[in-house]
Amino acid sequence: MLDRAHNSPDLPPEIARRRTFAIISHPDAGKTTLTEKFLLYGGAIQMAGQVRAKGEARRSRSDFMQMEKDRGISVSASAMSFEFGNYWFNLVDTPGHSDFSEDTYRTLTAVDAAIMVIDGAKGVESQTQKLFEVCRLRDLPILTFCNKMDRESRDTFDIIDEIQENLAIDVTPASWPIGMGREFLGAYDMLHNRLELMDRADRNKKAESIKIDGLDDPKIADHIPADLLEKLREEVEMARELLPAFNRQAFLDGTLTPIWFGSAINSFGVQELMTGIGDYGPEPQVRPAQERQISPDETKVSGFVFKVQANMDPKHRDRVAFVRLCAGHFKRGMKLTHVRSKKPMAISNPVLFLANDRELAEDAWAGDIIGIPNHGQLRIGDGLTEGEELHFSGIPSFAPELLQSVRATDPMKAKHLEKALTQFAEEGASKLFKPTIGSGWIVGVVGQLQFEVLASRIELEYGIPVRFEPTQFTSARWLSGPQAKVDAFVKANKGHIAEDHDGDPVYMTRLQWDIDRVERDYPEIKLTATKEMM
Ligand code: G4P
Image 1 (cartoon, protein in one colour):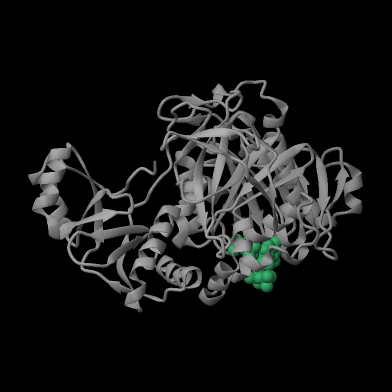
Image 2: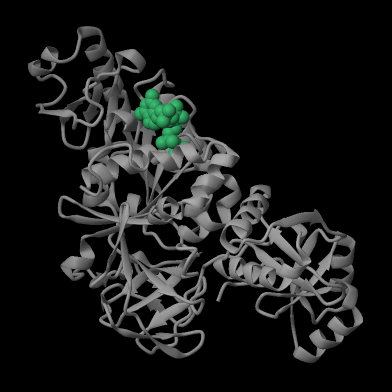
């Protein structure tokens, strides 16, 4: 459990102005569109439309492969930094497809807050609910953006009730919509007492903002027809009676979410949301490690790897490890200790991702996400420090739910295939098992689409056409316990044993009955469905 009160009240200003967050949503709710508008207002892109390719690409499998081919797009979108007002934002992208939820969960360990985007017509959908639960586990503060208000949407109270009931979190309206669908005019900013009016003619234009003196201000009648105004007054009065008021501490504790109503495609409500993250959103938070908690204002630099992306440039086989800096002021060229190997590493080419560009990061602060190109030394969960032995906790590894054997259609390429598979396993894209008996490999993933993406990447990045086929096993369990007992168990159960890509023993089976039997007959052996990634 994080102790949020731990943050020093006087963080260095460069750290205090950092906001590191992710967007969670169900596919199609508008995450890509909202991201694009963030970048537009953050000055990181010149024109809306530049990150569109990504959202569209996901829609069909073949297009998705195309996106994977064009690594530049998906990679620069993994973490993006931009400035808005006085704040420095680090937006960490979560892959939208549910098959990549594993990656998403890990991403959420690297942020301090999340924006939940819901579609005003659909409310809380399944994927939103799942991701929300993960945020809840970490008590992440959540800001809600109810999108597509320019279309027919559900009743505002209905939407709020649904969030409160399904997600068990209090909701406070930061804005209140005026009309909906064709009649949608804009919103009343309840926190700043302003009318925000949407411009339908120019989708990238900032909304007109009119300061008012409460909802009885006669000025309002110039902008809102009488019937809509009456409805707005009634609803806002009811909302003030029935719903909790904004309370920053409750928001930071993750028990209250402010909701903004808007339309990402019309750029409406986006700046108010950004201002909300800036003004209320948490600054870089204390991070848990096994040894102790790490406070962002510590002078010594530390951070952990939450994502590894291999073959960003297929010609060079490079990898980029995405590191969340947890403390200190990092400067390019620093020598940090790679905790797992205890070896020093000079970080000479760290990169910051600014929309479609990557730039050398001359310096970075606690809260920032930097990319470190490397040749495979850096793995998910690894810590980097100025010498201290710190093991960052809470980076999940998921039990593969689907297992398939894989072979190269050209047997001469088997050796290269092993290298490719190992690389993807280290990247966290899949699990790899080498059975002790027989040849070949078994690959484990969480969702079916991952097999297809893997097959495509192996062919594209390594030039090896492969076939995935069903295997006799359906479950994999990692083995632990006293070494002698594990060795004896491995010897007695050879037909069920495999090694993972780190060389750790794994028990494979197709029957729950087998697992129960092992647990009964070998009480000193522990079978676990996941392996901590460190
Ligand atoms: P995602 O990343 O969450 O999957 O959603 P994305 O932004 O790709 O948006 C999904 C669809 O919803 C897109 O339409 C997008 O244009 C539309 N959309 C996003 N925000 C709004 C909004 O505020 N109002 C309305 N009416 N639509 C919105 P599409 O038809 O799938 O793609 P496109 O042809 O518009 O690019």
